[in-house]
Length: 402
Image (cartoon, rainbow, N blue to C red; front, top):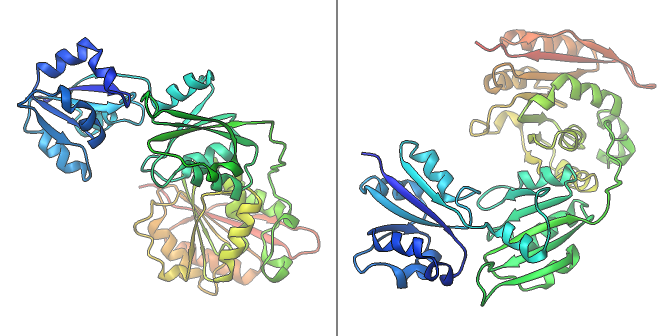
């Protein structure tokens, strides 16, 4: 028996229900209902006396276990249930269910209407219960207009602070609170990022970021070395810009989703990768504690948010819970090159790539031996010399898909 769902999108407004005969008829002809606590408070006056209410709360597995016992359920959700909404969750968890959807405007649409702002060019980013990744990507891509669904962590103030921290000052912010509720609704128009923290903002809310001007920040492929703070000012402790560009090419990062940078030091490889390919999920590893500050300062200075930093010995790092990397760069190895290659080989995704810059015949032979012992396949090396520095051999290996 397939469970039937009627999923009704609604604003934060009882009048929406009381004036909608179709919804009232659905309520009066059913007994099993579901939604969040806020929906229940809005709907309680309209529910039948024998109504059974299933609260949507975590863990969702318990909610869906309860759904299995009922033939027909009316679910109430906010706005458009298919825009980062509960209807999408039902379709994913119960693909055999029969689902009818009655949408309303989502909060970003309502905020756009209040502002009389077109939204066909708006990139909508749901941060509700999610990491910063998609917002970081939109900022690095310099999107003109970004609509954001917030939560208690990703608040308007937290969003403004993140933009200021990483230098994305070309945006102004609009905030909508309690949209759809005529008694509580409030819209804050065209706030400077530095002003946001001064405002008392109630939940639920959403945010629109609009770029005020064309961002003229120069973001070249091959960030000039002088733009990085170096470890103790040592120029040799950074992968030089021309080599970095060739490393990016060898790693084939546009085709990757997950990238590991082992021995990041100044963070130049991770930062270059994030700025050029902001879709990447990057995990950067370094044993020296002082390099955490270097990564923090350089990523803020160069506008590269969202790099996950791991400080400690890579050989002792628990990485089994991380997604398999599609590409790995070894920038430093602390005399453990063979061990690191062996560990990387265990976790590397099928067809995944491994790149290492060798500065001596000894390290070149060590890498080749390590790759062969780990069962990886070597690709053709690339020889390069930059200025007066020693020649470098860019070595590349890959994991054959079985």
